[in-house]
Image (cartoon, rainbow, N blue to C red; front, side):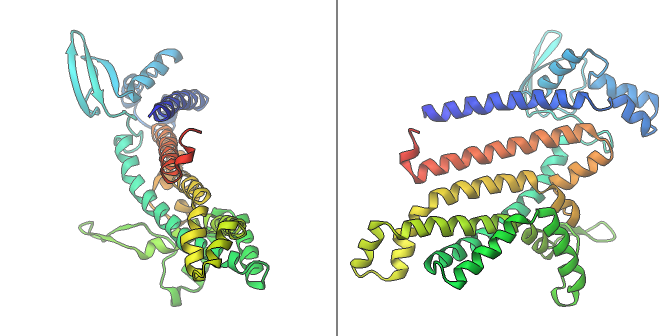
Length: 348
C-alpha cells in the first residue's frame, strides 16, 4: 500500500509537470484571436472566445485559469459561464466551488466540448489498439516459443530474421503498404477496404452499422512491430529458461515436452512479456496517429491530426494531455499486474 501511494504521488507530480509543459509549449503558437481571424470568424465571436478562455489576461493568469479548468476541484465566479462544466457546485458568496470532471474547453471549429470529442474518438483508438495487441500476442508468443524449441535450426533463424524486419519497419510505412496492397491491389480477393472506421452511417444518416472488416488492415499494420518484438523476447527468454536445472529435472521425471514447456518453462517467461505487452499497449494507444490517419480510422490520432490542420488548439492540447494520461494509467496498471504475478517485486 505504501508503494501504491508513492506511485500515485509520483503520477500526480508528473501530471502537473506535463500540464505546465503543454501550456508553455502552446504559448509559442499563434493566439486564439490570430487563429480565428485567419479563419474569418467575426470579431464578436473572436472576442467572446478570447474572454471566455481568459486569453486577454497576462500569461501567469492564463496558466492559473488553465489549471483551474483541469483541476477536479475548482473555483469560478458566479457570473462565469458554467454550461460546459460537468459536476456539482457549492455557492460561496460571489464564487462557486466546483467538484467536476476536468474541463478541456471547447473546440474552435465545432464548438463541442473537447472532452466529449476525445472520449468518442478514444473508443475507436481503444478497439484498434486492443485488436493489434491481441493479434501480436496470439501470433508472436507461440512463434517465439516454437523458435526457442527449435533453436539454431533453419526454422528458428527464419523466424528471427522475419521478426527483425518487422521491428525495423515503421508503423506508418506498414499502414501505407497494407492499405495499398491488400485494400487496392488484392481487393478482389481480400474484399477489404483501403479506409474506413468502426462505425459506418448510411447515406441518409439514419442507421449506424459496425464494420469489423474495416478493423483488419489497420490492426495488422499497427501490430507488426509489437508482434516482432514479442517473437524475439519470447524466443530469447525461453532459450535461457529451457537450459535451467528445474526444466531438466521436469524432463527427468518423465513429463511430456508440452507439459515441461507450457506448465514449467513458459510461466517463468511471463514477467518480461507482461512488461513488454503493457508498454506496447500504452504505445499503441498513444502512438497510432499516422496509422489512424492513413486508414481514416476515427480515433484520437485522426482527430488530433485534423485539429492540427485546422489550428484547433483546444482539441490539440486536450488530445496531448489525454493521451499522456492514458499512457501513465496503463503503465501504472502494468506495474501492479507485474507485482501481482511476481510478489518478489513488491518491495523493489
